[in-house]
Image (cartoon, rainbow over all chains, first blue to last red):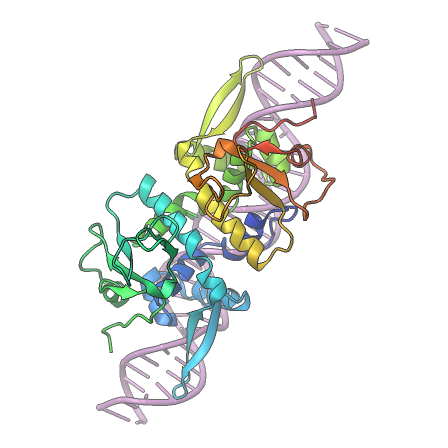
Length: 175
Length: 175
DNA sequence: CATCTTGGTTCAGTGACCGAACCGACGGTG
DNA sequence: CACCGTCGGTTCGGTCACTGAACCAAGATG
């Protein structure tokens, strides 16, 4: 949020967190980043976010150390935004939020998360019930659930239909 | 959010959840409700939120079934807003968000949560490490942490300095 | 040289948020 | 009964963020 005004007197870590990631679109940008989206244009088409807002969010997320802007080719100069550890640490929050949304508003699951090592579906906190351990995000495999549109319009959504590990860059077939 | 426009094409439970609780102030209202705040005025002074915004949030949260408006005295007619199960289900999200905020921006913990039955501090997901079980919110005892202002201005913050169980109504000493 | 892609910036319009003022129902006090 | 205080709002003008569309620039591509 940080809507010009901050949650001033709030002595609360929740409020502080919302200062950073509470604005509109911000958490969805982080979600996409965890899914492996890295490039401006991919965020743009996948989220349907106004360009100016996206630029602003990427900037503040970078400034907050949640994303890192790095050059991935010199000519033409192109940058990508990669999640940092601080961004990865938002995974439990996003997971909890997603579970709540599905539980109370969704129907069929839209995306399924599995422990890539053993194939078990993740527990509510991102742990593997079979292995009994926390699963590092790179070992989480995401695959489409039954509720997901099987033929989405934008190339990023289409790329995300293929099972893939979180954090690994998404590969659009546009090229 | 639901900023006039919704996260239209987002096929995602996270986006759906944010539609409901993603607007500014909303999650803080829910947090306060879990802490035991129930009355309009108490939300008002504790959050420092504009009156109109508070009224709007309470209305949508009620409409969404996250809070329940109920009359607690007939004359003068007074209503209180109590969290429903759906609201309680947001606890893991708020907990994760709070931990993230403290981890990355906070210093000393501001509030400590313990399993009232055994006195053990809660784990990251609201479970009791000692008992090995999920702790129902009513059995969570909240007490002020070292980082908390020991003499806050508003009566609600002052009431929340006393150890109390979550969900139980907060008792301001204003009366 | 014309055009396309990528990654933005600019701008006008709209809607959300802000703070302060006002309001109505009721209770208590003198 | 007049008056004041409390509680839970609504109203209103001003400001700021978000939106969508247009524009722009650097560099490849043909």
